Length: 180
Image (cartoon, rainbow, N blue to C red; front, side):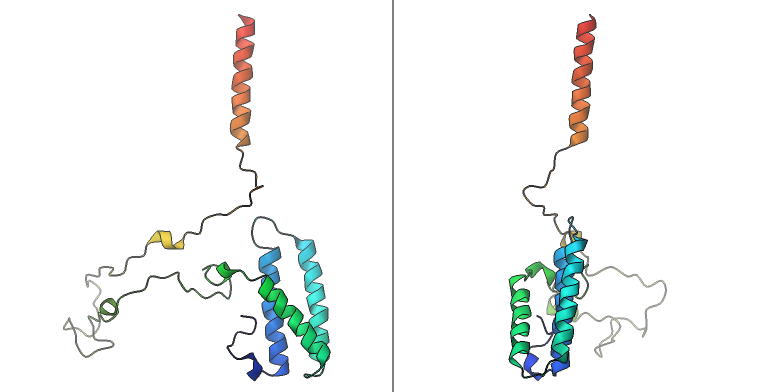
């Protein structure tokens, strides 16, 4: 996941470092800025540390022991902060959309009324005319696109407006009873 290829050993020294740097920046952004708690101070501090380390790594010789130890440190950091939902979120940049679209059967995919991909045509025209009746063959299910909100256990879900209204109603009723 860090290098964007199955065989990172085929990458050059600079490619390997820059791909690890790019994936580390994405990961730190996902950790520090996404969600309802954004910590810009830690995010900026981590960016400064990453920039310093990766500039040092680019300047090192490709076979140095120090380089391999720093690379191992960042690969371990990536593995420790792995988030499986990072891969399937539709709106997150650079994510694959696996699992977000329905998988159609071979029969549904082979339907070709105008013969774009096969020699058989279901219509006499080569292209559909303006008034051609089109019926959506593959309806989307909206529930596939919803991601539930997940909050920490200490997240406060109290409806304070309702509690204030109940207190006002109670104090008003006590006030009315005392006037009678």
